[in-house]
Image 1 (cartoon, rainbow, N blue to C red):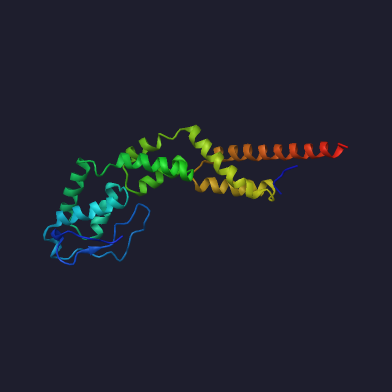
Image 2: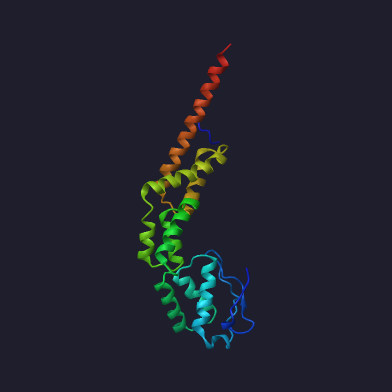
Length: 214
């Protein structure tokens, strides 16, 4: 029987009164009310772009595309933005490959995301598909299966009062949202629920034996 029934002030080179909020982190949404630089500040757009990028990178690593979007939001001319972004890439302040590897490591181990979900997140951040694929490729089949099993084991404990079909359906939905394909999800869920059923049966057997003791 189943057991499942920080605001900072700019340096003097940016003109008077040049204050902005600290740059958004990787997961922050785009601010629709972002202020543009003043005409006075834009007399030296490359200097403005450098300051914006440095503040953004102080908050958290960023991809080149994220910084390009931020500069566009601030009204930095395209040519100045490209010059600064090229320079930051040259000196290693922008490194999409390193960003992608760190992102995959963090999100796969911390959130249990499958390779498909990781690829989608990196694409959304403007990472080149080949660079994203190389980073995601560091997660192999065994890593993915182990992560899926940990997710199911953590969630299954709260579903012991559900019937097996309902528990399976909910666990399948959870794994799908994490990017797991149906075949792997079904196999892992079946294994975890079978193990839980076996453990429950063993527990009942132990109780029956104990009840016969004087």
